[in-house]
Length: 607
Image (spheres, rainbow, N blue to C red):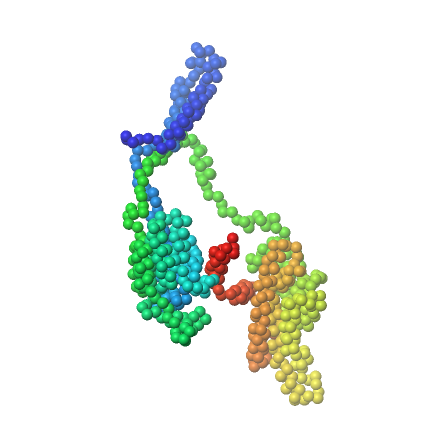
């Protein structure tokens, strides 16, 4: 205990206010001081209850003891030392990847660049301690990722690296890449960093050797992982084929192992050639791991023993227990019930907002009961599979969108003539209404395939005789298909009608309007791509029905009225797939733009 001292001795000053509080509490305890001033001393002792004073002093004594222990714990008593590392172990490593055209040579299967990517991934997986960075270079160095301990982030970008990402062409500048790696380590404050170069050749050996000497002088180490085979391989072109010289001979991708070995020797590192068994990366990682105590310093720090004094306060807290306190503690620590955002919020929503929430949740029937706006109620009824009720809800509602929705409901009910008339009225008011024009085309196509109602009565034409009967039988075949087409196709192409297809005719609910606009965009896009497919399916169905049993028009119309709406989720998925197909498949586009930005800044064309 000779080394006993306090880490935070200034906390002992807290004993002064503690003493003042205890003295004040002792004077006012039980009010005896005030009674002593009012009662004669001879009578005062006789009025006191025997033993009463002692029983009221021990809580004050326990409070004083607990306060002293708490102040001592805060002052940090200590008498032992504990060794702790002063610096974090591990080494900062910068990986340099050559993206010159020669890296596309195929003397290493599948190519030098592909093998370099595999080596990079092995190095990143083996990175345990320390930070790692990645620089790609050709005619200039380009930073892919700064020093970070998250090697997985860099590994996700490795498969995207290719020569086409570099914004400039020219001879490889290994010296610039080495200088950029040294600057990156210096900015991070790394005293003993490591640089690993993955390349196949040196275009300027003298400049690269000078950069390697500068790295070693700064305390960093350079290792080289060579990719290639002696003799080289044909140099491929980015647009296909092989590069040729002025005489038409095939050019070979260079491989300079001697120059790379000299570079590693000057940089104080190790020279290795790429191997398929992974031993090359293991040796590089072993070289980078510091030996015990090489880059780590230990310092003896005093161990704070103050928290152990808090254990002595637990018995005092138990002695201070009062009846009923346990119930208060239970109430304080009792877990709160889970908060539900959909509980009382309904009280603050208008009926149209409640209907919009129910419609978005897929409860079309419940939404129809809540909506007050007739256009929204008609939409909910259409989704619930009740076009007749939707048509009744739209009765007397003015506007282009209401007329368009009436056309959809009439088409689902099989009343094609009235539906076509409704779509024409919409186009008269709004010639740019693409949905109405498309549905009108589908209805007109279905009407052309639908024969007149008296076509299947062969006895109406007295002059046709047997031929008339035969024609009547033939004319009865197309009637099998007609009602099914308008009853199914137009609604299926526009299942969500007024509020979700157009935003003009929607009521006064801003939240619902935003939902309807998003649905409108996705549905219109999905419709434009599936239009031809829908028509071809309709024709194939009608052709199949021509060879069938020839059911009557009334049966098909009834089936059309009972057909449910198309699945809205499937249409949204198709619309999303259509949007994703229009996105260019360029995963390396972000890296290309980043490299271009670095190039422009290096030239001073950007701040």
